[in-house]
Image 1 (cartoon, rainbow, N blue to C red):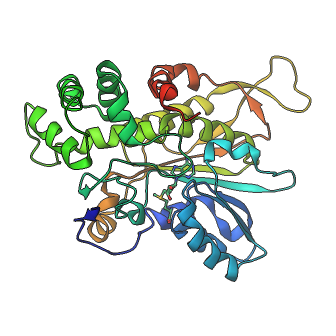
Image 2: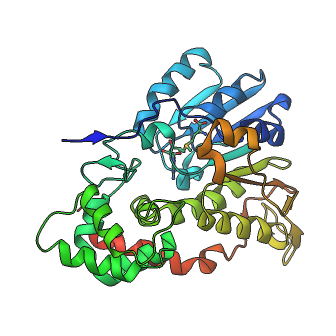
Length: 339
Ligand SMILES: C[S@@+](CC[C@H](N)C(=O)[O-])C[C@H]1O[C@@H](n2cnc3c(N)ncnc32)[C@H](O)[C@@H]1O
């Protein structure tokens, strides 16, 4: 039987909402792409400004319920697509004046409290972790990948110090029983050499598995590259991250785009190098003490943004090479893809 022991049943709370609004400036109108619609917290606030349009994406089909509610109110100015943000350039955006592309990464409170999704180690039942539009679940990862592959996932996606011991014990245990969420938590707890007083022992492995199952690294990298293509001059790309790996990728991409780069416009001047984006601050914006008090989930949020300085579509970036070691780990999943 599947049951949840998460006690708090309140709704999702949009993180850093007023900060996002003051950065993207919807009062001046334009089209905004909400790449992580979720419960529609950002979208609703943007649509309250009259001259705006919102195209919202979410890989989780369950977001459609909220999307329909919003569509009933803002029929002409709102469009929802059940798709992954790595495919942003598949949107037909020919004449759209895209003034902002916003990412609020991770999962919503509504998703984490859904026992079917199995995103939390507090959820009792089958290992799943699929956010939507996936090829495999955490159950297949844990029961099929080999010890070395599991250890690398835990180490690189979760920064887990005891990754080798945990992977070894999983592979040993799975010969005698199926590994459920409860069983995995038990293996992790018994494999840890030192207990962390602040966080649950299973936090890092669960983060790593969620990143792997949802291919969050390549999603983020392709999402950023495509956002940089479609946003118009003076438009903003804003990203809220929740862990250091995501923040590292966003920070690197924004920093590298704010340096002089070669671009190819419709009629590029050969070898031309220009400053593509402007980064306003090196430091990320973080939630106020008041927000953290009202919504403790927001405590690890970091908001970074850049403003596009020139209209261009193609540009040079080395982000794929820079994080290739992580993409290679995500590619262990090739052996799990359903035919
Ligand atoms: C933190 S929630 C967003 C909450 C939203 N800002 C709000 O205020 O309601 C993140 C959402 O992004 C979605 N998501 C995560 N990765 C995605 C991806 N690669 N493509 C599309 N949606 C994604 C999740 O399904 C989830 O609904």
